[in-house]
Every structure is written in structure tokens, then in C-alpha cells.
Length: 103
Image (tube, rainbow, N blue to C red; front, top):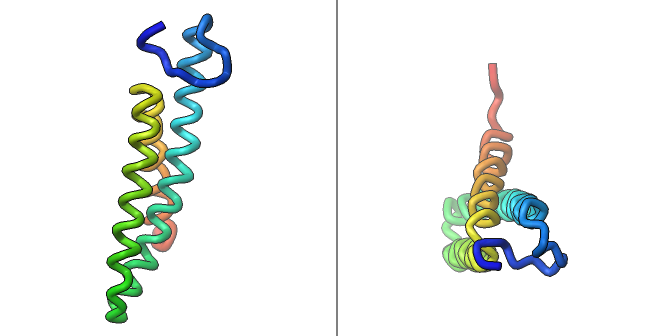
């Protein structure tokens, strides 16, 4: 069947369940990836402000992990990729806004 996520769950005869599994997988992976990505952003920033230029290597690794994971999800289909991006954006809001005091 073309157009469906190729997950190893044996759900091919059930396109709705297959789509739901792809969306759930993408959302969870995207959220975890986003938390990792944006928490290491603080580490990179602190290192660069201290003059430690080894942080540039960490920055490259951050983007490489993000790109490789999103590429792998894209191979599964559009639904896991798009839901992963939603997960990354939700994680961004949680991690980046987590250090602010709201009135």
C-alpha cells in the first residue's frame, strides 16, 4: 500500500491505525528530540560566552542529530515528519520558556 507509513507493527490492512501510530511515533520522537536539542542550546551558549570554541562542534552535532532524525522520520512518511515537527515546537516552548518568570 502506498501513501501509508511503513511501520513494523503489521498494521498495513488498517490505514487509520497505521496513520495514528505514525502520528504518535512522530510526536513522541519529536518532543524528545526537541527537549534534547533546546537543552543543549543553553550549554552551547554558555560555552561560547566563556570563549570555549569547542561549542561549535557541539552545535554541529546538535544540528546533525536533528537532521538525521527528521530524515529518518521523513522516510516513514509525511505524517510522522509533520507530527515530529509539532513535537519539536512544543518542546521548544517548554524548554525555552521554562526559564522565564511570568507575571
